[in-house]
Amino acid sequence: MANYWFNVVTHQVEEGPQSDWTQLIGPYETREEAEHALEKVRERNEAWDAEEED
Image (cartoon, rainbow, N blue to C red; front, side):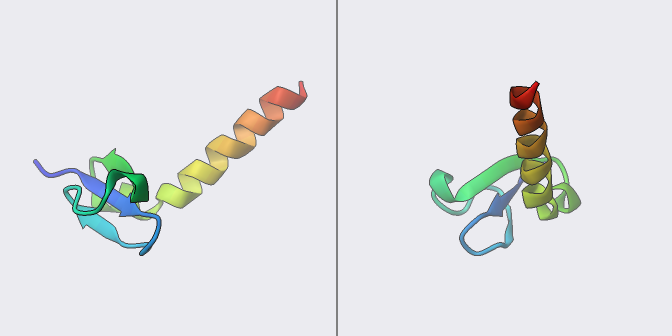
């Protein structure tokens, strides 16, 4: 089973880590999850920011 990674430089999904780890977010189980990596990061950051404000 291959893992999928999102490359933050190219904004492309990679099957298996093909680029330097400093450019990757993941691993994800599916291509679709990797495609939405930046959305997930944004949601988590907003949640953490809200926790800090409490």
